[in-house]
Every structure is written in C-alpha cells, then in structure tokens.
Length: 533
Image (cartoon, rainbow, N blue to C red; front, side):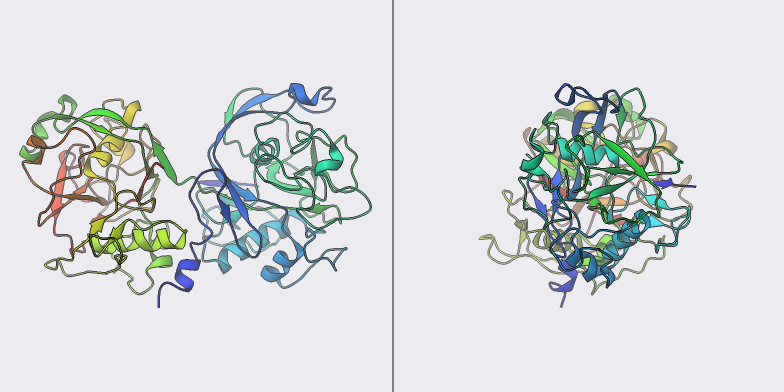
C-alpha cells in the first residue's frame, strides 16, 4: 500500500536482529537507539478529562491502532552521525542528547539510510510507483505503508505511545518537571522519568516530527489514521526544552517540512505487526457444504477439530525476507521477482531452516532440531526431492515454525470470525486470490488481494504453503480432535492454499495437496507461525 504527500549466522542474522515481532516490553536495538514494540489498541485522541481545560486541543475521538514499534527515546546525535556522517545540532558536543536542527525531510532521509544500512526496505520514496527511494530532496514523498523499514510515527501512534494507557497531562505524569527536559537547551535522553510504556522524553527536550500534515481531526472513529493527503505544515508533537508546561500529550503544532530549529528533533518508528494472533476455537475440517462438489477423497470425512491460540503471519515469506537470512541460496525466480513477491522454489527443509535462522536472529528458541533431545538446531538446505532428513519439532519453543494443517485451514476459513466461504475470505475467488484465471502464470507481490476475516492475505492463491504435517489420505478418519499434527511418519508433507496456477476447485480452503519435502517447485513456499505464548 502507498500513501502520497503531492558464513550466514553473522551479518545475515544481524539484518533481522531489529525486527522482533513480539508483545509489549520487547526492545529493538540498533545504533544504540532502542525501539519498543507496542501492542495495538483503542484510545481517545485529543481532549480527554485528564487534560481539562483543553483550550486549543480538539475534541476527543476514538482511534484504533495495530501494533507498531517506536523509539524508547529521541534519535541521539551519536545515532544520527553514525548513519548520516554528520551532526547538524546546535548543542553538538553532547552525543547522547537528541539530534536537533533537522528538517522533516532530514528525518525521512535518516530513516531510509538507516533502513539501507540494516538491510531493511525503504519506507519512503520519491515516486508514486515506489521504485526510487527518497534521498532528502524537498517535494512530494510517498510512504510504502507495508515496509518494515524505519519511519516517523503518525500523530495517532505518537499520542498513543505518549499516553501509555493513562490520562495524564504529560507523558507519564501530571508533573511536567518529572518527565520533561526544560530550560535553556537539550539534555541527554532518558534522564527524566519514563512513561508506563518505558518511553522517555515524549514530553520536552525536543519537539518531534510526525508523518502527518497538520490538519483538523475527523469527528468520528478511525483506524490507523495517517493524516490528511495534502497540506502545508507537518505535525510536531511533545514540546521542547523551550516550551512551558502547557504542552500536553494532546497538544499539536506544525512547521514547514523544510524548517530546522534547535528545538526540533524526531524519534523513529517501524511497522512490526506482521504476525496476527489467531484466537483458538472449534471448526469442521474437510469437505463442508460450501466446498461444493469439487471435494477430493482425502477431504473426507468432515470432522470436528479444536485448535489452541497461535500466531500466523499476515503474508507469505517474501523474497526480500528470504535473501536476508539465506544468502547462500537464491532461488531461480522465473515466476515473478521482487522484494515483495513471495519466495518460492524452497523445499520444506529449506523453509524449516529459514524458521530457525529467523528465530535465532530475534533471540527466540528454535522450533526444529536434528535430534529428539533437541540439542542440535536444524539447519539444512535440501533441494533433492528424493532426500529425507530427520527433523524434530520442539513444540514448546517460542520460535518460528510451520502451521499445522489444522491451524492453516482454521485460519484460512477465518477462525472464530469465519463467514463460511469457499475460499479464504470470499466466495468471489478473484477478489482474494491470484489463480489460473488471473495469475498470468506468475507470482504477484504479497497483499494485493483482499484479506480474509482475520486480516490474512493470500491464504488462497499466489503460492502454495508448506505445513508441518506428514500427509496421509485417510488421516481425517483417525485424526484426534484437539490440535492434530498429522501422522507420526510419512513420505509426503502437506501443502495448502493453491497458487497462481491452481484451478478454482484447487483453491478451496479444504483442498489438500502433498509433495516430497525435498522438492523445490515454482509454486511452493510458506508463511510463518508461532505459538501464541
């Protein structure tokens, strides 16, 4: 989506060390500039009872946000200089003070440059097609809202982070001096009391650039607002050392995007809500009535299954994500190539290796091992479809893994929000999937079709997705009810969802496919899962 404004375990793992997809309290570290992941939620933006009298603050309205990461403190001079090779600050002899005298354009340039240094996709572009990364020139800027790279927070994100689920006048207190640097100049970040989210200096020190144009709020509930599409001034929040205690968590200011002053700095944010928590539940797996006459024998009998809570990625693993962790194997991408295209020509073993490498990069316990004692972490790229390698799943591990076949189908059907559709999210296949009638014999960038009821993209079509389970055509006759994980052994592994070459019948949420685990095909890929805890 775009918004407009007019040896592998070394450097490869470090590319992912700052992309932790977890809950509140997890910190991301880069350039000595940590980020904290905040779970999404609903809050009132604007005037709230704790801020009365609100004076110029707009009336409150409900805002719903998905999870995101935001800087624990403002970007420091040391962090800025390490990325940009310069320090524009007036108070330039204090490396741990916030960088200041930076324009909105400078802040965006820093975000892109830092993303580049850490192997992340740029968030900002100079063209609407999102092909030319923004490098700092004044003029229109386009935000790739699906990018996981560094960016500025939106005003809604900034205020949510500052309030930290409280209704205090300032970020963490009703006492300005407890939380805000004020006086004749900036001070080292983090010297004042943090708020309930553990974030410092959201009140005082320097005013902070946000993405949004400075424009009136809507008078109704909004979800992940990103501000007006045009404007003259960019939003500043938080107040600076030069401001009085009248600057509350809801106070707003605006400046021309080219403005640079000793009272203006910024903190970074990132979009990290790429794993969706799926609430567990009970469903009928297999050939249910809406699946029609196309059901195959292995979809019978339809049977009741209960799955526990788990997490599932909103998107299939992309080529950009694959390259960051598996640099020694670049698949032959002859069916669609690009950073946002799903990776493919990856075997089940390849995918398990990726899961473990990403878990290690993010400080998580790997899920897969060579031995049943779970002492030797599985890492084996296998491209021989006749090869078999022992692999053991440590089910208690919190790292990345495959979904089970039951988890996959439950999620594809929409979980406890299921609309009872034939495909993942709709009975209109073309609205949710790339398949043989519209795929043009190629993969497509993830997330271009409509999501299903759980906000999951491409669960139908685009690329088949490996699951954990060994395949047996009669397994549904003997499957346990609670959290089935497939047969204990087999020769073929399950793969689900259909691809760019699948027929309408082959794209149904109940349809099952199987293949040799060492096979690398143009239609085979995967998406990540994790335990809910």
